[in-house]
Image (cartoon, rainbow, N blue to C red; front, side, top):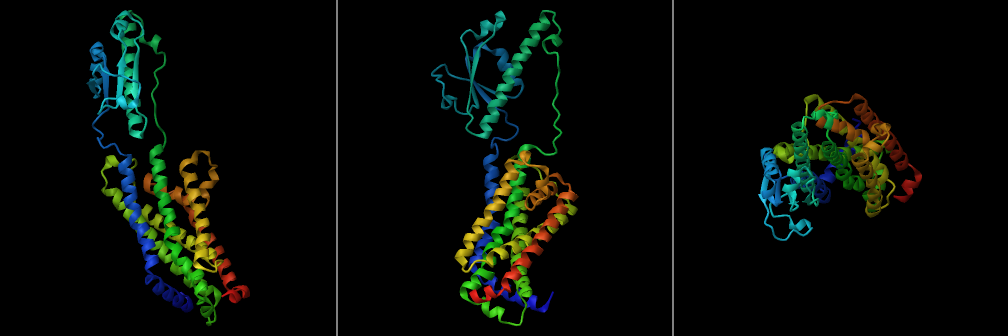
Length: 392
């Protein structure tokens, strides 16, 4: 490293390490995100565990011994509901039950006579878990209906194939489930946002803050080139961004590894080559973000003005990230080779599929390097301009 660049880098690192505001901003993100994700996974989980199946309360249970036996054989918990108030309202589902099945008075007679027996199933779709359990119970009851229909046609000498001419099995060929993909992309967005959040304060202080304190003019009066000054400050911002991003990713991955498996909607598939490639990609991303923040900070005359510009800039990665999470199926294929998009796609593939996608990872690294070079060139040019010297 050039001696001038190294001198500026050491000076900036010493100043920023002493800045409590910058350190608090970094620690709040690095330590706060793992706690937030752990709490989010807890809220998404079903605290009754995987081995406990859905429960259904039945009004008129004595009329349906066959249905009760069928449900209990499949592991469902069946509760006899009291014949009291059965008003149509989710809050009237007996406590502890996932659904409330009301059988009409002639249910048993209708089954014996071969007529259509009517029943009404009440479910509560307030939450994801209650919705899934309600659908689970509905499917089980419909399955019992098909079972009864099969017995009827067989008893009459009719081949079951006439009733169900097609036997269809479902095979999922997706590499990753939907919930796995969504939650994985959310975690990758947290990683991608880390350099933006961690480097924001130090990038503003490095240029906009020094312009406000009028100390930048003193630096520019020294026998040092604009590019060396730019590179020294950029290296400091990139270091903060890289350390903060690595710490955020490490704490999140460690936290996830200690969580009970039933709390997680996905599984990590981390390999040593994958970690090395992810480290290289994260380093490139931090370099690019640092250079971008420097390019924005150089145009602000004060720290407060710089915060406004940075806030506007932060909308872009957030928008890109949420577009990737919720609208991936509607986006054209080439977006996976654009900055942030490619970083999220590549990191998701590395951590959740255990596969390195050379094209996407390569495009993420190349885009980061090209963006870094362009932003540093623009920042250096702006820093060396006569207009800049006059304003400082």
